[in-house]
Image (tube, rainbow, N blue to C red):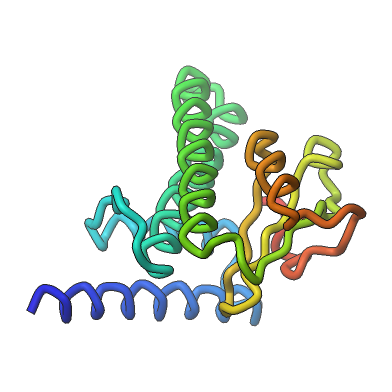
Length: 183
């Protein structure tokens, strides 16, 4: 019974995630809406990240959980910075976003370890943001659909290089439009 519930939970998670990706790709929702809906999905599932990664699904869920929260709190920080009445919340939201990005990078590493660093590649991507230029890289799991991760973590980059996964040179992101759209 518990196994079926977990399987249904993952199926629901991946179906919702794919649906949002399709809606965004078709222009039905903006990047901001995409981020808000991703946040809503992980909040409404009421499933905390898994402490042990023993499946692709758990690893992907953890990555998505932390990524959704990081982007959501970063978005709130940007909103607070622009609003006089909410400026006091900027640091709070920014710190939460930063912590969730760090958690996301650790979750990424756990998934890559589970997959034995096999059938994946990573590389720097071209970005319009001056802040992210020469910092943001993409990790692609070649055996899975919609398994594209991003980071600017230097410690994770070093591990990718040590494992022979990182390819030198600059490439266009597989999801270039999404990466370069502001929200």
